[in-house]
Image 1 (cartoon, rainbow, N blue to C red):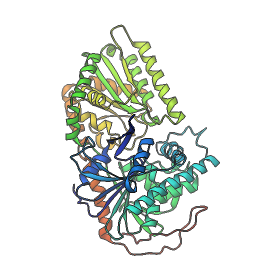
Image 2 (spheres, rainbow, N blue to C red):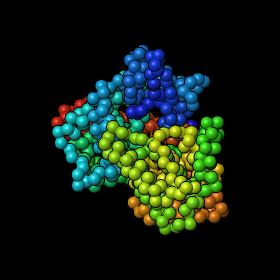
Image 3 (cartoon, one colour):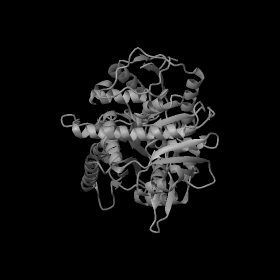
Length: 522
C-alpha cells in the first residue's frame, strides 16, 4: 500500500466482512464476505487497529451481535474466514427490524438507488408523501446508529483515527459523525453512479439537500469514475449553491471544505486466478464444456437487478440469431442471473420478465441438438468463475453502473481471450473502453451488432484487446484503492484544522441547529 495507516481505521458499511448462519444445533457459523472492501481491508489489518461497523442483516447476525462482548466480534480476514490471517474487530448493529426495513428497502434501495441509476417510471413514480416521510425518519435513525457507533469506537480524541463510510446507505453519516467527533478525518465513498442535477431534483428539496450535506460532512468524497464525481459537483452547485472549485476538485459549504477524488476499483488478480483454479471450479468447467460443446460461448453474470439491463441483453442475443442466422447452432448464451432484492415487487416482476424472455428464445430457436440459451437464477460463485474461464464473449450492458467488476474479472480469467461487449454507461467503461466494444445499453440492435463483431473477431485483434483489458482490470487492486483514500485523508490531516464560523448556514426544514464542525478551505 502506498499510504501507511496511522491510528485506528474505522469502516462503516451496511454489509460487513462476515455473516452468520444458525445451525440446527443452535451453533453460529461465520463466513467471510467477498468484494473489494474486504480484500482492501485485509491489507490494512495488522498494520493498523481496525474496527468495521455494519448492520446485522439476519437473525443469526443479530444473535451473534447480542452474544458478543460490547457487540464486538474478532474476525479473521483470511480468504476462508479462518486463520491464519489478519484480525479485524467488527461491530454489528442490531437495528430494530422495522427501522432497518424502512431505511434499507424504503429509502436506500427504493429511492436513492433508483435516483442514481435513473430507474424511475416517471409518469408513475416516485411519489413522496406521508409514507416516505416515515421512511426518511427511519433512514435518519439508521444513519445515526452508525454515527454513534463510529464515534464511540474511534477511541481517544486526537488519536489520529480515520473513518471510511461506504455508499448510498450511509450518506447522512459523515455529517452526523463530524458533529459527534470533530477530531476525526472522515471519508465517504459512493459505489453507485451519481445522478445529474435534473434527475437528482426528483428528490424532495429538503431531502436532496440533506443527502448532499451529509456527504459534505466528510473531508474527502470518493467516486469510481470522473463522470460520477462531476455529477456530484454539479449537484452541490445547483442544489446547495456551494462553492465548487473544479480545478482543485473541492466543495466548500457551510464553512467546511470537502475534497472530491476518483478512485476506480480493480481486481486483485493473483488470488482471483488461484480461486479459479480450484477443484470445485474445474468441476464446473467440465460440466459447462459438456453443455456448450465446441460452440462459441457468450457469458453474462449479474444480479437480477433492474439496472443490469438483462432483458435488453437477451433481446440483443435474440436479434443476433435473427440478423446473423449463421450463428444458429454455433453459439450458446449462458446467462447466470441470480436473485436480488426480492423484498421489492419491482425486482420480482423483473426476474419474471427475464425468465419469460429466456423461454421465448429457447422456444423460437432451440432444436433437438442445440439449446441456444442456458439461464440459471441461483448464485453459484465457482460456476461463475468457470464461465469466465470458458467465455469467448462477455456481455455487460447495464443502463448505469458505478463500476462493474464482472467486466474486469472475466478478462483476467478467460482462457480464450474473451471479447467484452460493455455498456458505455458502466463506470468501468472509462478504463476498459480501449479494449472493449462499447455500446449504448438501450440500443438492442447495436448490442446485437457488437455481439456479432465479438464472435467474428480475428485472433490477433482478440489477443490485442484481451491484453489491454487484463492490464486495465488489474491496474488498481483493492489494497491500492483503499490506500488512495487513506492517502487523501492523510493530506487532510497534514493540512491541519482551525475553527471557522461561516456567515450563516441555512438549516434544513424542521431541523434544529446542532454542533458543527467548521474548517477553513484547504
